[in-house]
Length: 169
Length: 348
Image 1 (cartoon, chains in turn blue, red):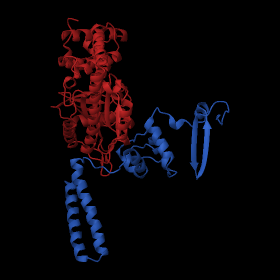
Image 2 (cartoon, chains in turn red, brown):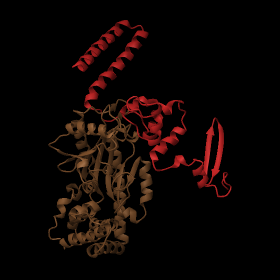
Image 3 (cartoon, one colour):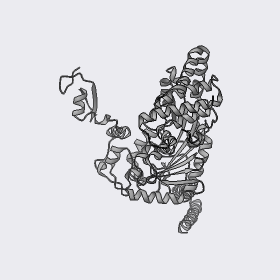
Image 4 (cartoon, chains in turn yellow, green):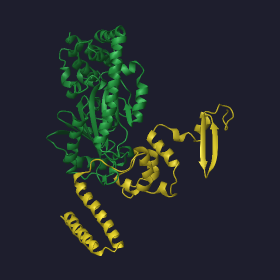
């Protein structure tokens, strides 16, 4: 098969794209693929960056995402897409939703099960317990178990007071 | 060469020690990536921010255990020397601004500052002994964490510059010597099965470096969704499997191709003992053969520390430090051959 673009060289690069359900195939030679920019995503100078580009290419993204910035370090999602590196810890919170499928692909699982810093461990533990208690409270109220609900509410208040006291120290 | 220093004094002590499964595994290594909350990762931080980060970390480092160095204060040759000793990465030595390293007195632990992450804690043990390395790394991490506010997310774990390191921030790796599998062309197949188990195989200085002297680094690919202990045990399982395969092949080579393998080992020893000019790559390949000969019982065990020491000392920066001055590459090849001859002659 000859290259569709120049009709001179054998086509060695084959693309298949699916846009709105329409399948399009392109068969190009190396030169034309490079010239038309189609080979850009295969540039291996930054393997991880190009991997993200390919991955993100297959995702539906909100239109303003690429230019949206991390409020802490000001890097844009576009910059992350190109380099594969985040700008600062806050980026993970700012782009949490967009990163989720990427992390799932590279890590397999997206919930940390390893070590927890001792300092955060204390705080996080309380927060988790509080979340669980609030959930329980909601359920009890909906079941009209007011007596039990009152006990849970007191427990929550007590814990909130303690947590607040700690952080105030 | 009469004013020559003792070769062993220039060698990282753990590198010539033999540990568990020492016939195949040279060393085990743990790396923990950590970052400070509220700071840009090094690639996005200005030099002044990197300096501030380094100052904060410097205050948190235990001065009794570690020597703290700012990379700008270290000469390029010394930095390269530290890379050859696995205390610094190839990435960090090229641009020293705002970067640092803390090295434990026994050189088994080090902390790189502002490499790809603010903190890279690294511990090494001889042979296959990942647990000891993890315990040590965790205790360094606990000490730092008691002073520094580390970036941590309840769901994503420790936050790192590359999303490939989040969660535990852990890289577990073993440096293995696989001459049998390489010689018999069994390595590609084995490595592809290892990669299916979520492991990566790299050259000796980590990411993007080539395998020299039949030495390979096997490490975990993922860092999230499992505990540190689970990642450790996965790697230990893969490495144990590789050790078994390598030993099987070595035994078969010894049984079925005795003359061939003896010839290869002693021919390499002969070249090392007599060569007048030798490159790093050739020397490492020949030393690998001699090491195999020692592990197969063809050559006296006493030679092992010398061979392990030579594997380190013949690398460019070590050789230049050993010779006491910077050398042109052609001269290096001459002095490399000279050092090897002298060290091997010393053992008779």
